[in-house]
Image 1 (cartoon, rainbow, N blue to C red):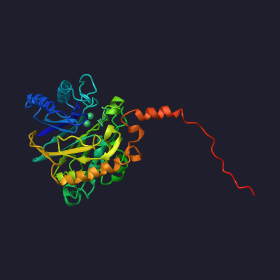
Image 2 (image 1 turned 30 degrees about the vertical axis):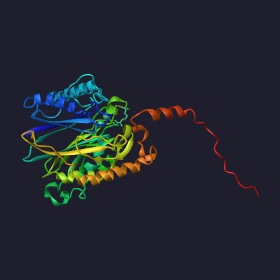
Image 3 (image 1 turned 135 degrees about the vertical axis):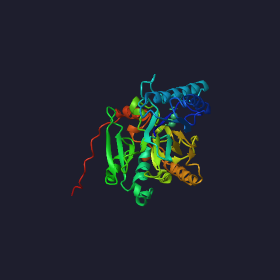
Image 4 (image 1 turned 120 degrees about the vertical axis):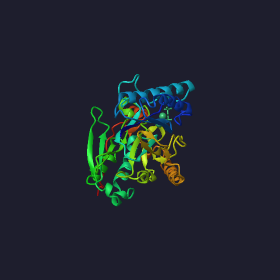
Length: 375
Ligand code: F6R
Ligand code: MG
Ligand code: MG
């Protein structure tokens, strides 16, 4: 059976700052989704990470279906209404348009969508991150699909021997979708050369070279590139298929043991470690650190099983401790050097304003001339 999984997420307001949405917001979304179950959608699941709510829907209408996108949009309008009524902070923050215009892409919420031919025992892992950007998944995707240190299946299983194709998008090209398709393992150095830049080149999709099937889809929204000004970080959502011709769930999770440094954190303007957390949790320190959750689930005829919280196990406490340490280490140097993002990636205009203002205060002074000792 051909089904589509659509995962949409947005920050529509939260409690106590940019920390966690109110449960009533999720209830309002759930009510709307329940009414659509068996009508427009087959099934749905709602969760949050940090201040972002994610809605995962299954249906048979394919990708970019107007009615499905509109349903997601309406759901976030509902949660915004509740946030406004309760007086929560940042109500409707990610809803950049006044009215729905056919496709939710470019309207603020992030979306990861894949149409698949459902396998027996179809297994999917959903990632949801907060206080970071879609490029935060670049390194984990590279490692889970290319590196036998994390994915020994690349050596052990004949099903993955042909490798994977990476579709990488240049998100700074806003006029067109500028995408390059590169094959691993032959072109892994080219892939690495692009995706080391998490702001510009983002892995959007990964395909199996054994069957051509979609393996992973990442959202590639950059809110500031849409709105042209700071409107919050993009807090990415991603779907990865697991097992069989795809990496095992454990191979998919393995790169998250790195707690690698990503952009985001306080005011979307710092580097911090990507900390694996339990679902529905909030933030703790310096509006961060950047956090990521993972849920594994199965789909049968479009119906979802229970979502398993992959980072709930105490194993991940060790990684959380490591991430906390890494956060403290980089925070020790405050605004200096690599702790803060380069000028162009800062999410607020304060520093560029200061630099502009100070430009006129610089004065040209004559360069010192070398003097020679006179005999
Ligand atoms: C980062 C984020 C927060 C806010 C910070 C200030 O993505 O959402 O770190 O930037 O709490 O928020 P405002 O400017 O809304 O007071
Ligand atoms: Mg927010
Ligand atoms: Mg957020």
